[in-house]
Image (tube, rainbow, N blue to C red; front, side):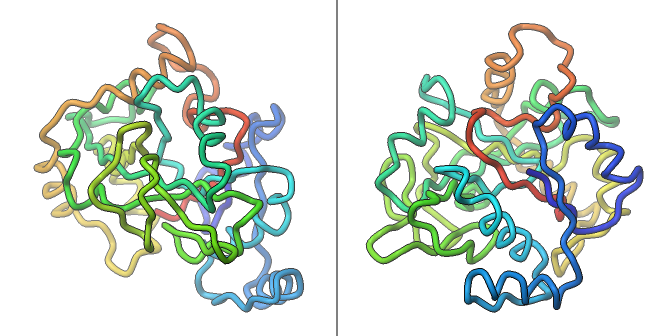
Length: 268
């Protein structure tokens, strides 16, 4: 499920049409902020901040689709859930956490790997990452259990019914948007924050939902931290598509683990 929160060229409707037609993507547009907040308030009794479009989109997703799924992941379009312990797929992993409020996956940040132009496959092309215990990787994103979630309280965390909590794959309880030490023992959320220079330049032109837009100094500082080689994305893509080096039609939108809902956004 992809939610658009700003304009895009080419129009996102055109980009997503083949994926919508194939049943892989649901694309919804959020109504005017006051209408959206009233709609969510009527359904959930919670008054959202109308200026936080990302959380409003997540609220709509829960309201309209939460009953259709057991787990729902709230991740960005440049983040990929990858398995690191041999578990066959994401639904199999999530089944081990059905008694908890949500499963949190720590980031693993990836750089450009020296690419100047857009590559056919991000997972194959970008293999330089930061150190596992780097501070940035303490950020988590959650796969919320629909049986126990109350609402998504921020881009990185959720609120649950009394007695239920977010945990890591090692069952360490998570408080808020961070979890340390970083736990990649069973899965990681590969965050391809830069990709190629061409794509970073396009991202800067689109603008940012963050208070401080990402500058070229941010690019240089981030690249300097990419000190390790990480092939987890390569292995994840090979499990999806086999050994073929050219990506399939849906390579850029398909995440590891079919059968679980993913709410992705284009804010960052």
